[in-house]
Image (cartoon, rainbow over all chains, first blue to last red; front, side, top):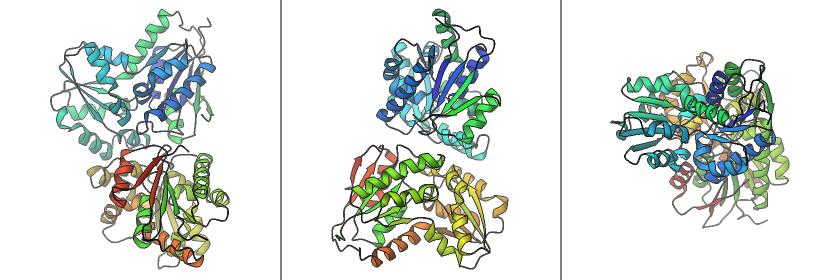
Length: 264
Length: 264
């Protein structure tokens, strides 16, 4: 096996960059192929069939690009289409963003966990099911927060707009007595501090990039797939060019990234 | 000619419903086929090529559905793809949302006009070009306001979130001395009162549905295409089901509307 093959990462847009950035930080020898399906963004409001169709196409593209592992850096795709994605990936290992987080929180000390995510993720109840399968005594309260992705995509982080939207969502009655909140969307780490501020430290905020990348490391070690390349390559494919993606990708990966448009 | 044929109307999502509603009000004998491309919503952040590809497909579908006229109830599609849409429509008359508004404002008493719209509409400069072609002495200042569509789609009208986002956008320095503002997106009439409140009556707010439907009436009269049907039919095709669309369509057209999913 050629251990220098890249790791494939995909999302509907910029959210997955929070995971890709963590891969770069913790696995500095690994090359990455990132696919951002910006033409079809956001996934969170779409139907299961549509999300699956796009996710499977991207997975096949990453397999064809000889990725040694695929990280589904999108909660909506994970929650709606993970079985179809694994099938399309064949023998290539697939790391999703939900099961490592479920494993992480299921056995810590808490009775009631909150979850914020897109509509499609919440409607799938993927987190609730994964957590309760591991520990049926926990209570999981889910809330769809669909305006947060556009707020992040449009540069309204750290403004009265984000503050009010976050406060409105988090004042959800059933969140009153939660001990932990899961950020169930790869965009949300970008507003983690604002979420933390609302809870004033009372609630533990769990965000997935670090947990997911630890799972990836574990899997690559197990399969003897870690790279020793000194000059990893970062390639970005976008189904549609968007300024926001290019700006954020460059701020995370430097100005000399390889960027290409590719229709799904 | 069969004058009872339907009028075709399309948009990326719910925005065009503000135009369809006005057709229903002013032309109560006309049947409507509405296509909402909710699978690919929002159009405002996409590239010209992508917007054109979707718009042409929808136009061909409406022509095949025997529409007697087509209303492009989307500023982004009008500003980026109107020539290709007219070509795809062949002999079927096409009414767009920009040129009637440009005609309306170009000769009224004002020196400086503001425009708010999606990124794709602003980048096309379609309003500016149309208005200045008619009256080169007018000054047109354009501003992209991309968060407003998601705010409307996610039910944050009349909240602190919409108030702050609208105030942030409208405090744009170059808007200080405008006399008129054009709502260059068919979603924005849904927040017209909130926009009006920021300007405190100082600025005239122009929204297009009424102007566009007047143009449609004029064209149907001229071509002798007005319907006398007593029971018009309202058909809605969605490329992806979304709760928000169904709720708003029913609130405008009643609960017994015909709704069908149709992949583009």
